[in-house]
Length: 274
Ligand SMILES: [Zn+2]
Image (cartoon, rainbow, N blue to C red; front, side, top):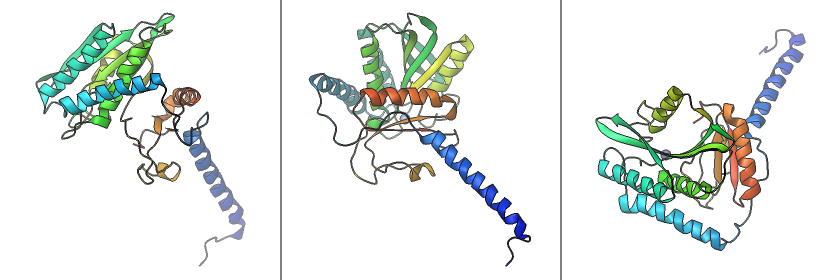
């Protein structure tokens, strides 16, 4: 079989493939190289402060996922109870709450927002959010009471900090099916209203499904081709962004690695990889 009709074309053929391979490698490095050093090995023992923090986080997760359980528009009372719990927790910290209510299938639903005005650049807003509804037929402990607990704890710790930018802590409703990727998703409604108001949101961190931890090999899966480059043990915090937010992702994971002795992985990927 004759692959190259003319032998003189071979160098050009090889050059093309070398360029293509080079681009793929560069693209991979661009997506996957992260600043700082991932923590490896055993986790340090919890300090007294860390133990108190663990107790508070567990209390929130236990209440939302255990006492209340499944919470979404199918179980509307439970959804309302969850909103009341989060609102109450934020109010007790001293925050004024702004409720963003809207109708979803004739049910009144609410995004809950607590704001900390920035001291130097109040017009620049950082949103720290987590959804509080659970998937159908799930108590939603990991997805996403764990994220809500972390959001509440951050709100608590930030309360007495003078922040340069404005920070908003937001609990989103309706992120799970049947609302997932629809106009009625809580975060989508929030983003649309923020755009209408002309809010300058410079960063958004979504705390999502962060409570699962295991050292068992084979416990972590990814969409291809990410699976070829990341560990298969689910014992780390994942930092994930689209390509446009790559520098924010780098700043976040760098700070995390400098301050937390906990394994972390990061990827900035095109939006079609989900
Ligand atoms: Zn979720």
